[in-house]
Image (cartoon, rainbow, N blue to C red; front, side, top):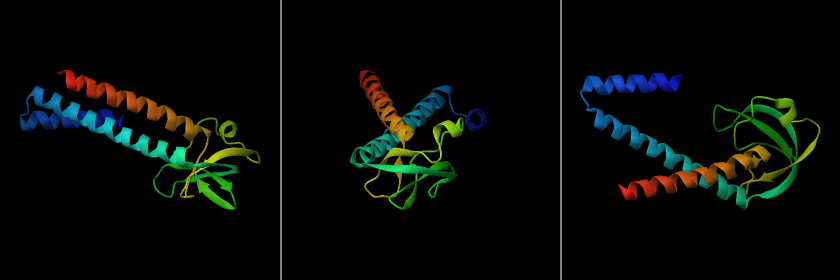
Length: 145
């Protein structure tokens, strides 16, 4: 909902300023390109961290606010430390996705500040593949114009 509201306000402001529709389309495409590149960089960073991490056994602890953002993340206890998951928690079916008192296999980052649970691993690999394909497709499209 907020996305559409912000988009509508931006279009109205562009019309008030007097920008042509071609300029607005170019700006929208440039903004989409920045989003694509940003997601690509995020998933490269996450993928490199995932590849450099090592496997540990842990136990789900709780759902709480992330130390670095406003999202809620799953916390796991491993090697005597309570560490947050790298990505936000899945808001639905919490009892199925995060069972208490059951050991699970995680990937501990090399820095030891966060973990990758199975959902974060799937998100990282899928996001890396799709963002790579999207950047490649955008580059091919731009080179053929």
